[in-house]
Amino acid sequence: MPRTPPPEGQVTLSDAVKHLHSRGLQVSEGMLYRWTEAGRLKRYGPETRKQKFFKLSELDQIIVEELSGTRRPKPTPVTFDIIRREDLPACLRLDQIVYPDDLDLGDLSTYQSWRQKNQRVSIAAYNASNRDIMLAYIALLPLPEPLILDILRGKRADHSVTVDEVESYDRPGSYTLLALSAVCHPNHPELLYKLVYHIMNYWLEQFPTRFVTKIYAQAVSESGDRLIQHLFMAPRYDLAHNAYMLDLARPGASKVVRKFQVQLRAKAPLPTELQPDFSLPVTRSE
Image (cartoon, rainbow, N blue to C red; front, side, top):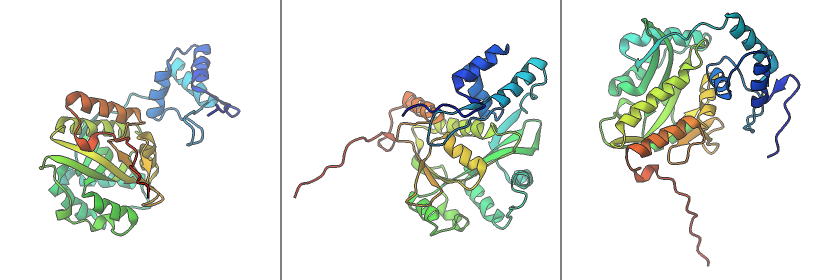
């Protein structure tokens, strides 16, 4: 696919680095990617293209911050842990910040019953010096795949899931997960990706006794949609217009997923469920 020239006022990645160098700021392409993941820079361009651009005005602001010593403060130290019952007020405060006009407390008891069945349903990032300050969380519900498909098709509401339908992580073997929510404080967008790394490290520890084959999600918020894009989850328009799936048996397009798959293979042989299958279907002639 031919490369598209950047719009006026925007530059490619390589030209962005050259622009910074010309102003006395010696940084690499990797640093620009890290600033992007941390929310300090944005990349612009159609979602259908891998090629993205940077705004010169935002690059100039970075130059001012770096060279004048007025750069953003260091990230808040955080700790990652499950959400316990006593953490629910902190969780609600974060929800209130992110969704001030759409806070629903009706299903709180249902979610709490799921956590009692499986404490790892929700993993959160807390302020390291004050656990009462929750900065991000991701909720992943382990369910039988047919039930997940019914939820995504609208045949079942997610809050209708009973405790008995939620799986614990006691048994060996494969699991399918439904991503219920990905919530992040607007000042700490980088924490969603750090939470993903934390969750992947847990499953790396469990492998090969326990492993995830597929993760399903629906994009219902800006933070959730960003995470879906970051992981290159495949659209499942056959289920819903905003349904997506990450099949861990397929080679990961996302650097994060690809690294995780490499770590799994390095630890133990892949089970059949995680082995890619590129064979063509057999057709029979009449």
